[in-house]
Amino acid sequence: MNSVKPRASVPEIVAVTLLSLLMLIAGVLIAANYGNFAMRGQPGTAKMLSSEAMPRGMIMSADQNTEQMKGMAAVDPAQVGYTASADARGDRLLQPQVVNGVKVFHLTTSVITWHILKNRTVAAYAYNNQVPGPMIRIRQGDHIKVIVTNDLPEATSVHWHGLIVPNNMDGPPPLTQKAIAPGSSFAYEFTPMQAGTFFYHSHVNADRQEALGLYGAFIIDPIKKSLKYDKEVDIQLGEWTVRGGRSYPAMPMEGLLPNFFTINGKAYPETEPIHLRVGQRLLVRFIGTSSGFEHPMHIHGGPFKIIATDGNPVPDSARLLKDTVLVAPGERYDVIWRARSKGKWLIHCHINHHTTNDGEEVNGAGGLTEVIDVD
Ligand SMILES: [Cu+2]
Image 1 (tube, rainbow, N blue to C red):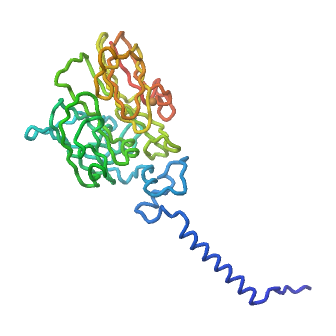
Image 2 (image 1 turned 45 degrees about the horizontal axis):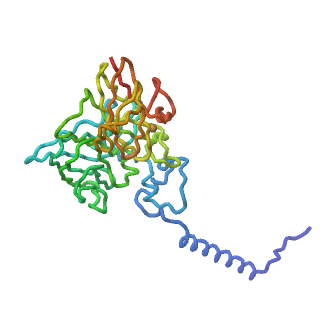
Image 3 (image 1 turned 180 degrees about the horizontal axis):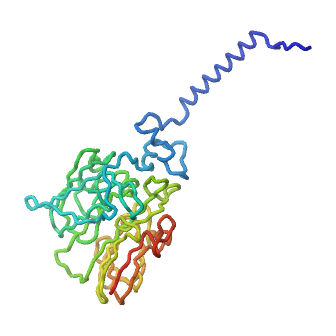
């Protein structure tokens, strides 16, 4: 029988043990000092990094920190404070109070549950519990004040897109104002002398906040109205990224590409049909409220005339006749379309995936589709 006898001596065993311990300590120290621990120690970090909070398929680099991750994370369902009814609509006209000749408007930001379809909700960032936010409509030269109260879990601000305003009313913090902290308010006050189609939107983490719904139409009626039309609509474009029941801000990047698309906060077939009679003229105000995607907007039933771009009238001689206009983020196009004959005519985006709901057509279309019903 062979007896098993250790070949190492006691001092040798002690030396190897000490060396192993030293290497272990060195490993921990090197990792602690030179490794990427940028995601440490911030509130909500554990939740932020849970599998549902970050989108699947997103490519993350080793040096991304918590703030960057937060910007792209799903809306935390615990932050939702209001659920809009399935038939609630956004873009409702906001009534001002008139105080000493000043039109005073109130906007409040918060996290809500919003129906983009009857059977599909999103967690949205909203002004006055609606997506898009309410329409602010004034007359050229009106002196206005907009009091913005922030009930979001993060800071925000409002930018008046395209409007000529004093610099300290323009909205991009920290350059022109302090961001509006959660629970506080800021009053914007100015006198727009322009007229036309404009919009307002968040200017803090706009890639997150505007994508999640913080935008609304701002229409200024001219003092002298020369344009003739029978009906008008505005079309505010938006995208949603909904995965596993969570809502992420839609962005043109891996894992955050949208799967739902909305006109005025609703996907077809929930978009609002437009009713016209033959011969009537429709003014369509296309508004590029999208934060990251362009949409070639097309109208069936014959060309339309572009009469204003970005709130500026197009001179008669330059009024292009087109049937498709590419609406990029930030852009506005006012077009006049004439109802030439009876029937159901579509307004839709011509990136065909944008006319589906999660890849599916419902009742002939989806997403960025709206029906003009002419009789
Ligand atoms: Cu599109």
